[in-house]
Structure formats: C-alpha cells, structure tokens
Length: 466
Ligand code: AMP
Ligand code: ZN
Image (cartoon, rainbow, N blue to C red; front, side, top):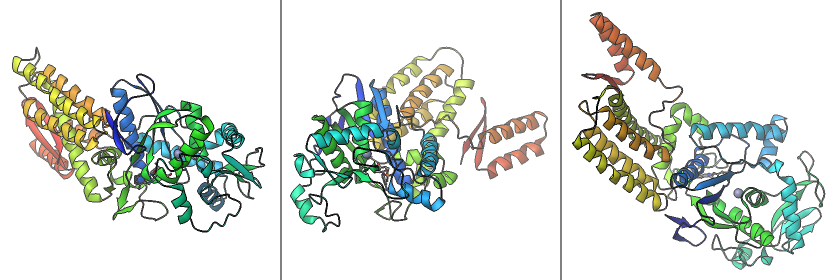
C-alpha cells in the first residue's frame, strides 16, 4: 500500500511503526459554529482511510481533537452573552451529529483542549527547560531558530520566511517567526493557572500534546486539510520533536480543498455552506459519495450539479443492491448452478480493482469506478432466474466494498419515504387482489408522481427511483 507523504513529497510504501497497528491523529474543527462542507472533506476522507486500514487488518487508534478554546469561540460567546464553554459544548455536539450523519466511525477519542491543560503546561515547561521556548511578560514563545528542522514539512526556508514577514507589532519576540505557546489572560476570556500566570494556550501546542498523550511520542499518520501544512503542522513538528527528541509522525497526509468558484470554501470568506443546511436538501450519504468521487488530494468544486450527479451515481448502486436483495428473498431455492459458481469466481476482479485503487494513495475515485463495474456486472447476471444463494453471495460482495467507503446502500435514510412507498405498493397489491383496478391505478399514479417506477415481475413487485 502506497501513500503520498507530504513530508517527503513522494508516494511511499506504508510500513507502520508496530506490526498491524496504526496510530493516527487528525486535526479536528474549532467549535464555534456548524461545520461547513469543506470541513466535511477531512472527516470523510480520513474516516475512509481508517476504514480501509481496518479492512486490511490493522488495528487503528484514531484521535481527533476539538479546539474548544479560541478567539472565535470567545467572540461568539460574548455576542450571545453566554460562556465559551456553552458555545463549545453546543458545537461539539453538532459536529458529532454531522459526523454521524456522514457515517464517520466514532474516533477512539476526541480530546478537548480545556481538558488537557495539565499536559499542555507540562510540554511548555519541557520546551523552556530544553531551551526551545522563552517567556516574556506572561507570554511563552517557541524559538523557531533553535529548532533545526523548522520548515521541513512545508519546504519553507526560515530565513526567507523571516525576510518576508511583515514588521512585527509584537516587539517581544526574538524573531517574527516565533509563535505563541501560552498567552496571558485578557478580561472577558477564560483562563487557567500556569507557571507564567493566568492565561490560555496558543493553538498549535494542543495537537502536539494530545498526540503524545493518546498515541505516544511517534505516530504513524498525522492528517488534516492542506491549509494546515503551514504554519500549524510545521509548528506541531517543531514542538513535538523539540520536546520529545524523536520523530513526530512518519507520514503526513493532507486533503485538498473544497472550492467555490475556484476559491477555498471558508467561514472567513463567507462563501461557505454549512453541512447542516445542505443536508436538508441532499442526504448525507450523497454528500459523502460526492466527496469520495474525487481523489482526496485534488481540489473539488462544490456545485449543485456535481452533487446531483453524485446522487444519481449512488442511486445506481442502491437500485442494483435493492434488486439483488429482492432476488435473495424471491429467487430460486436450492444450490447455485455451475454457471453461477463461475460468475461468482469472476467477481474477484472487482475486488482486486478496488484494492489496487485504494492501495495507490487511497484513490477513492477509481475505487468507486470498480464498484460501478461490479454493479453493471450484477445488473446483467442477477435476474429472476437466479438462485437465492447466488444473489446472497453477490450482494455481500458488493456491500463489502461499499462499506469500506462508508456507504451503506441497503440502509435507508431515517427521513426517507421508503416506508410510505412500500405501504402504497402493498395497498396496490391488495386492490389488485380485490380486482379494484381503479384504486390500483390511482395508487400507481401516486407513486409515479413521487418519482417511483414500479414493475410487476413474476417474482413480485419491484420499485426504483426515476
Ligand atoms: P478548521 O475548523 O478551519 O480548523 O477546519 C477543520 C478541518 O477542515 C481542517 O483539517 C481544515 O484543513 C479543513 N478544511 C477547512 N476548510 C476546508 C476546505 N474548504 N476544503 C477542505 N478542507 C477544509
Ligand atoms: Zn492540529
């Protein structure tokens, strides 16, 4: 299995630190509002990578933090006249609801900054003791010049960075590239006691600390969106490697942006759509499928047309699975025929194609194509003359691949109209039995108006969406 490592700028063979185990850390959202579609991309992508690693037999420890103390959270709290904790608690819950909607497996742990203060203070103390950080009037800075490898992830040169930096307002820093590890308390802000007085941590230190606390000094995979490469991940490497004296993460994975009109979707630009508002119109599984339709490192444009295309693609899979499921219930009893056994043997090519795609830097776009080919094959080969056993075997193979991508084609959305459709079909069957043709036609028209096509087959009534 190969993956593209931002640190080495190459596709590399994946070799975990410990056999069969993967320690993975993914930077999570700052919880001051609902997450937007752009934030949904790392959720879906790194969950899919985790699922694939699990499918390959690795035991994955998956840590994703919540940044629950930050300027934006404090600002929102002041606007609403509530505590920062209330804002953070509210949007942690909302983010978890969205993640569940997207069918993201729960993380091994979602640590929060406010619950990790002791360890944060400990790491800052270590950095000061080792000569990598200094305190000026209650603010602690990381001394970027003291760390030799600064710039290795982003490929930036510290002298160029310094030359390019604007004249610093903050005269207390030794170098404009130095960044804050601890900042002093300002009125109206939450504070924690520390050896440098009351205050709160800077942003970057939390991830170094949480990765160390829950995964250890060296981890296998560190991931996030590509906007985090610099300065966030560069600073994390500096803090962790300076404090621990060991490599921080072996592999660094970064997803590309979701753009709107070729510009990154972001809260600050105002060109964002929250996942929650989109999910009112477009089911979560379609949003997930939309994200999987592109390679995770390529940019994708958010558009209704592309969402609709993703919805149509997913329907093709769902309709196929529903049809095969119908045969598992209504097909022929008894053993599989020889030709069915042969066809079943042929299916291994779809699984191979799927794995080859995923082994090549998690190419979910090609993995989806492998599923589409499997669906085409199943549509041709599973029919009213098939045995239940054959249909069951094909169904479980198609579903196995879908589930690795976090797609569950047999599971209907909670708010979907499936129950209503099936009730109407049952009523129509009743009407036909009673030779009440007018009623049966009326129900068929109602279904047609709902965009449902029904087909009376020897094995029973089948339905699909237009
Ligand atoms: P934030 O709350 O802004 O720190 O973002 C949480 C995660 O979403 C980070 O991994 C970001 O890199 C990622 N992210 C933010 N905006 C986008 C976007 N437009 N496209 C893809 N990923 C994004
Ligand atoms: Zn982080």
